[in-house]
Length: 78
Image 1 (cartoon, one colour):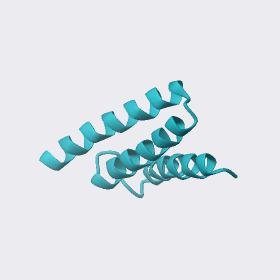
Image 2 (cartoon, rainbow, N blue to C red):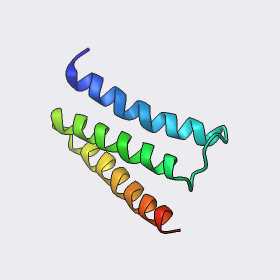
Image 3 (tube, helix red, strand yellow):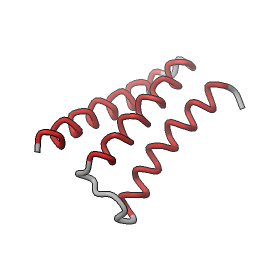
Image 4 (cartoon, rainbow, N blue to C red):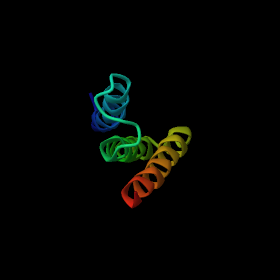
């Protein structure tokens, strides 16, 4: 497994962990942890996409991170 693969797997893994924790009601989709995991995972996956120069996923993960950051900010303001 290459460096790019490892980084991408970690990022996607973090996003999936957030999703599964939410689906099984271990965390809420409005909670700080959910947004933090999504931001972290998306930024790491975006970085991996930049490393391999794959624009569709750079856009996808960059947007995912931006939306999650907005959600986190709204959550912190409550």
